[in-house]
Image (cartoon, rainbow, N blue to C red):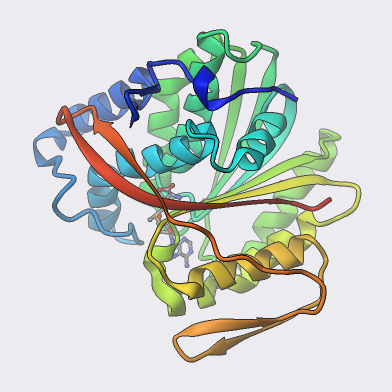
Length: 318
Ligand SMILES: C[S@@+](CC[C@H](N)C(=O)[O-])C[C@H]1O[C@@H](n2cnc3c(N)ncnc32)[C@H](O)[C@@H]1O
């Protein structure tokens, strides 16, 4: 396992209590916007929405929300203030070396996962982590064909940098509506079969910025999320789950995450809708509320700083 502390984070990522996105990531996004003629419409204080199935929603989201989502992921995984070091350790442990299968659910344009990989890459480049060969097979699942196309485009721009730091990525995209669990089950079978064919037993599931779907939207996706958790809970699999959300101060999102966690950890529980939120009844595990964490980050396109609020949940099957 890699050992890292907040004070060791290079100043290219964290300086004077401000988060900086890796230059390669910021430049990849800038070039992406410029080449598509969308640079002039970059307005992070305006719309940006939550993404969605339409071309317009996907464009708006990748233009205006990509960096913010990336900043949240980088903040919780680098953890510069050593607030939740278990999450950082879990991520660095899973992505230290060797081969891993990464399931990116509601992946959209891949902002969360590309930020996570960019963080690892920047830490390697600065000698904070060893450059051991790392092969990550990503399956990105979303119902927006456009967003998935942006994911591939942005990864293509970052790939030479990743490769030069020993990180090899293989991206498979699945256009799938996660509210139809039968369709998602086909994706999951294919993902697991590929891993099994390669004799891979290490898995990471990433969910980032799904709470925009609100309580009813999340409820629609839970069958699929729990299918994934049940499959990854297999005792012969070494599975981690990383879930990062903007802090919205609502219990429905933390309870939804808890039911996925309990499924991954094979803990019997009853999950039901209750008023504006959900309720979980379980006798064995104490569930905790997640603290709000706030941080300042520099928007590299505008050159101005912004404040974001985030919470993270990381858990394993063993
Ligand atoms: C706010 S974006 C998050 C994107 C990305 N995970 C990130 O890190 O920023 C939410 C994503 O959920 C996707 N989504 C919402 N409902 C979905 C569904 N029923 N099936 C598949 N994807 C869905 C949207 O298309 C969108 O790309």
